[in-house]
Image (cartoon, rainbow, N blue to C red; front, side, top):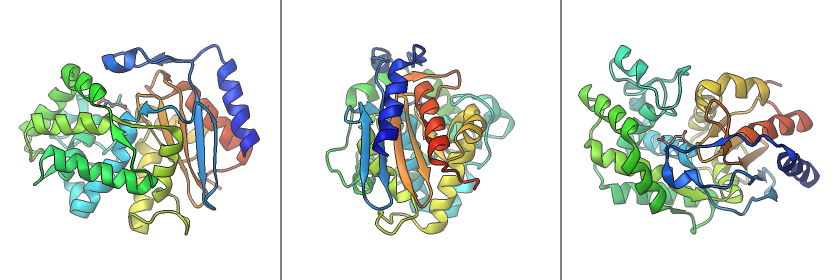
Length: 301
Ligand code: GLU
């Protein structure tokens, strides 16, 4: 495993095309695209890393996985009255389908759907309490109390998140938000501002791996469903491509991180800030494709 991860880090370093760093969040625009890290937490408790696996990065939309687990913990299947479970085939921040589908976002991983899951775990609490709950969950999952939110990234996103504000207003106009737009956006942007290293993220993803030694934070049914949504919707309009190339459930973020689950085997985190045309880590996706080929791991047998 160590040799494989070293090979992936080496291949990434030698690839001249690193993709484009997300520039719409000013605080992320200056990140060095030359970085690449990977970490794997195996079912037997061993952890292997390579490259920049100890460098913290902004997990951005990977946080939507933890938010979904929290929202389901709060309201269970009631959540599905407010958000769907179908891929959107559109970019992560598209507003198009919201109008046609009466303010019910297609799935919890596009931004509109994630605003609903954030609104769900925020209901009845202050943003501070809700974010405290989120951090408690992530820290318990990773077994690491040092995980924190980067305030600068959160504020940079609040200051420039016009599109997310418009999605939230649209949801509110359809009666699909319980808290105010300001509270939901503030909480959502802080959630996206959670910072982790590849090692921490691989550890945090262990609750989605079906293995005895891993933290059991959600029921078996819920774990399966979260994995199913990661497979079908975790890479926005690149989800089909990721399933085709990698064959494992994954959730990407515009910070360049991807959390990948191999059920029963491992939780894997890969990070490289340059993105492909779908807004998913370019080198991260390529590394996972090689990883899946070399290990033979796939949920498709
Ligand atoms: N915080 C980002 C946004 O709302 C998340 C998008 C992503 O990571 O894909 O625009």
